[in-house]
Image (cartoon, rainbow, N blue to C red):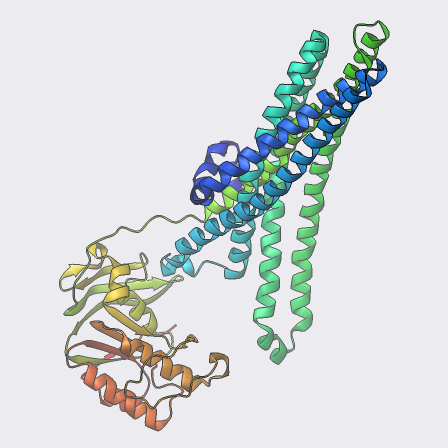
Length: 524
């Protein structure tokens, strides 16, 4: 994936960030405006301070009245106090805005990923993808606000600094402009190395953290098979790659920062030498010299902050590239069915992970019948259930239709939400229990303390409580005792009177209770 992103690096521009900025900041527009006002006030206070200090120094050197000196000192203190208060408020606002913006981006990506078709889902490493999305969202959100902060402060501080320097000397003004141009040239030289090394480092971080989470997720397997050393060696390998990428990235950043420091020192020395010459010849006061020194430092700070965005820009572009790389095409809405009377498969074939599960399959499922879907493990029983729900967008041939309407023309999200109820083979723990339905009540307890049989009962309850036209059960009798199995069989027999009921099962009693048995015989 790195190579594909690298090839598009040059085409990645700042406007690629705009959709994510809108997503993160549009709901916080008022807070962003208040934050911007705080920045402008802070920049003005920092820019006014050198003028006040210059006036104070000149008043002292000219031995003006004590009251004048006190007023100048009070004004300096007042400006500093305002700057402290405004900086405190802007820091709080920055934290809140950035956190909410990052969450908005993460939430959007999660919503996108959970809606992806199954054939794409099987290609994802969830641990790696989770770490990547959260990291990239934080990077983009932080960058967006930092750009606003840097630009506003720089505009105010550079504007006042340039005006003051031009008023003191045209030579000072042009020297400062020259160094700003040199800064821009330096950034242009480092742009691509920063992008490539930063992107590589990010990818290695995702792979490393994904590997660590993967090892921890399989702790039981490692313990049973005594594979500790092999697991640690695999982590060592990923860490070695991460370390190499990190050192390479930091090397580029360090050279970038060293160039910045050298340019700053050279510009400051040049400006001070020119100013000292003017003071010695009487064309500039000592107070003005102090102000020039302060404004030069302020100007360099502003320019360096813009210069420093260089590494952040490439870091942000790396994150944007990865977020865009996982972007999925939007599903076509399709028609929303009001009910399902029958489902048909015509000359249907399906291949998953390069394995053909079935070919030329012709089936029909009608309301009022209970169907038992049987076959050896790997014959595609569960996959067929997912296909009937429209979970796959590719990998199959032939046709699936509902009431004669092709699946491609149907809104499958609406179908799964309103017309289909599906019981997983491995139940997912739920917090709140649904009302009783053909099952004895279970004492309310934490799901973590429930047995597999109790979880299975809750899963069945969840499915039965949903009002749907099609009910799918994957190994519903697994982990159930005799009493609950009988209750389940009675429930599905009652349910099938007005519904389509399909059970994937190896249970002979449930098969015997079925109206039709569909056997899938193709194995792995």
